[in-house]
Image (tube, rainbow, N blue to C red; front, side):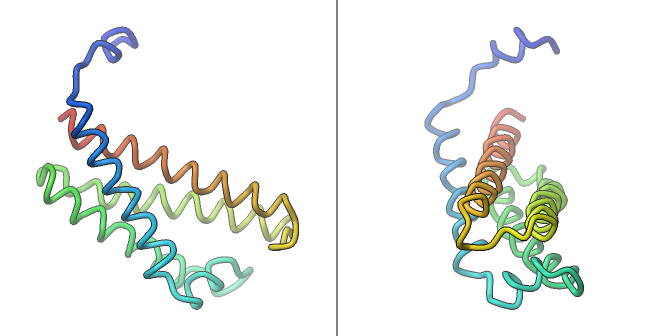
Length: 134
């Protein structure tokens, strides 16, 4: 499919917005409500980070599965995609933070945090469009 053909696809804007909002609510729940200090601190550690990271990403994947089953059940596998993408984004943020020593007091930390959240939002847009366009 060419880029111009991709741009010519017509999708219901209201449904795109609704599903995107569901994914953003999922992000808020999984990153700020359901993530405990073990996950938040552990995934940022130089050692012992795998279990807290995997647990955190499993929560994200589980909530994506719920959204997919409601919107388009044949795309249940997007939960695994979300796990891998979320894991990759959070690992990159953690490794950059560890390598640079950026802490909460530095503006660079907050720039990194903002980039992390923007990547998650772009992922959610792609997931929403995938669920609707299929």
